[in-house]
Length: 114
Figure 1 (cartoon, rainbow, N blue to C red):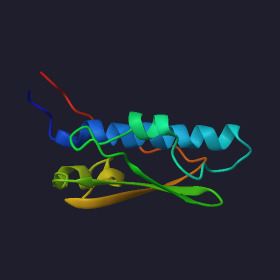
Figure 2: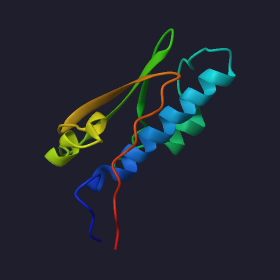
Figure 3: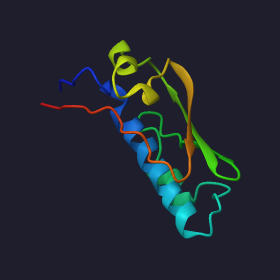
Figure 4: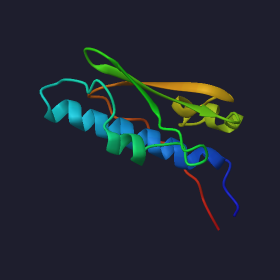
């Protein structure tokens, strides 16, 4: 498998964070503008680190913000910080991404497989 310079080995994990953030945004919009206090069991199972199997960490920041965290074993390439994927730039270790409800979740880095 060969991957492009963007997204790299963390693409499935970043995709999961993106999907979960989008789902929480949707829940917020359809459930009286309230953030969930915790992830559902389904979300904990569906959105987890594909390598470690650990669920993503979720922290509600009422009234309209939330954070999703995970542990990444390597940092992102410097090209990500310079391009349109800067939001997803990360170092190795514990990483958190802050989201505002009602705002579009930033596009994740793409990845090619061939």
